[in-house]
Amino acid sequence: MTVRKKLAFILYIASVMLHACTSSSTKLDPPTPQPDSAILLAPTERFSSSIEDETSQLLEALVNADADIARSAIKTIIENGDKRFISVFLELMRANEIRIITGAGYNEHIAALEMLSGKSLGEDWPAWVEWYGATELEPPPGFTGWKGRLLGRIDEKFSDFLRDEYTSTIRVEEIQWGGVVVDGIPALSNPNMLPADEADYLTPDEPIFGIFINGDARAYPLRIMDWHEMANDVVGGVPVSLAYCTLCGAGIAYNGRVNGETYTFGSSGFLYRSNKLMFDRQTGTLWNQLSGEPVLGTLVGRDIALELLPVVLTTWSAWVAQHPETVVLSLDTGYDRVYFPGAAYGSYFLSESTMFPVWQRSDLLDPKDRIYALRIAGVPKAYPIETLAEEIIVNDVLAGTSIVLIAERGEVIVSGVDLRSGAVTYAAGGEVRVYARQERTFSPHPTPGYLYDTRGDEWTISEGALLGPKGEELPRINGHLAYWFGWFANFPNTLLYAAP
Image 1 (cartoon, one colour):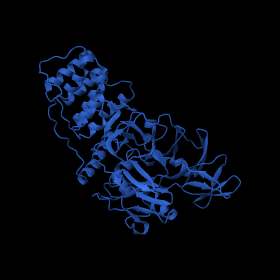
Image 2: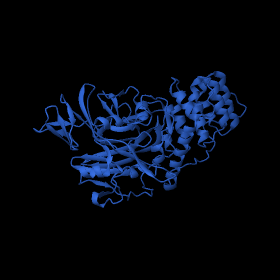
Image 3: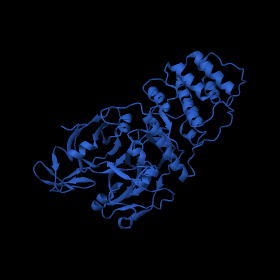
Image 4: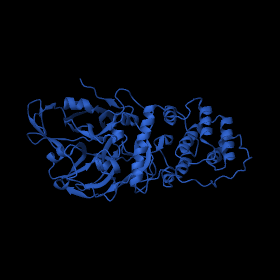
């Protein structure tokens, strides 16, 4: 493991410990498992050479508390050269690292990995994950349920998410435990709000997520959202789930109402390519936070997806200037947390490293460069925030739709804190809004909140639309910020904007 990866892992453990100290629901030490009763073989019994018939027995034997049974299973798998079990040994390697006890030992699982794969990556779990991700290997039948039962030794609720009868649109092998139990990062539900003039805990330049729907303006400070990563609220009569993945830098507002059903969400404790997997409380289905689509569970295959709602990342002072009537999250959340800017993930935000391995990467940008992410008609495109801040107005075409991106307040922010000095910094973010422009071309205006078209007409920037001088309205198109690595890992076919 490289020094950078070790540092990232140490920073991650520190953040998990902070969560553990403030939440009785977070477990760092999984309970010692009891012997499995699913298979009770005598230590001297041999497995059949018919690996297809014995797959289920082998899976259970590998996690049997009896070391002889586990070693016999390993020997059978290696003798058969069954590469499907590479994914299984990779899970066992990780299980050993997080103190889930299995019959065979850590080194035995690594040795089996190396023999089956022909790779010599030793104890470097991130390297194994990134190598496996780039392969087309498949796990053995029954792997999903087996993995659920294995991780269920940390939290039995994990086994409810990972079941063999569920359809999955992602590789279950790439689902990783994120270090907390189900709801170990607790979502806020219809949280207490304060009028702007009563929010004396906020500083003018600190970051907030701003949402405005049907005349209702609400601010969600990152100093609070870093600890909760999910807020289920009602804004302007619309059920909103503000889903925030701290690891991939994406705060996304979703309409929780789909096909007449309303869903509320929590944090599953699982990650996929370092992206949060959230779950709905109505069915227990896992959803991809970046795509707003169900990926594993009963809702998969129903052709449903969450609708994006408008959200901006901006400073508290900028948001209040635009929406003096706004309300903002109260510190009275019902949870005991250190609601100080950067307290939860400040070191991660300031680091160049990721906490978890991601195999699908692009070096067109630095991994944690911030981008504004759009998807129109299924076509994804990333716009570097640094470029948007320089250009202020970008006229573009995506999937046949003429759009204009506006980044008139490009100095925006995500808070980080230096643990040694305690200094808080605000790295470049970006207050970005996007609108359909039809065939018009726009240019900057000297006054924030306005822009010009090519005829010199003045247009007003509102949360719902661009408003023209003759009553014209150009609708908003919703997107969100993200780290480049997180967006690319989930949308490798993305386009990337480059300044002319």
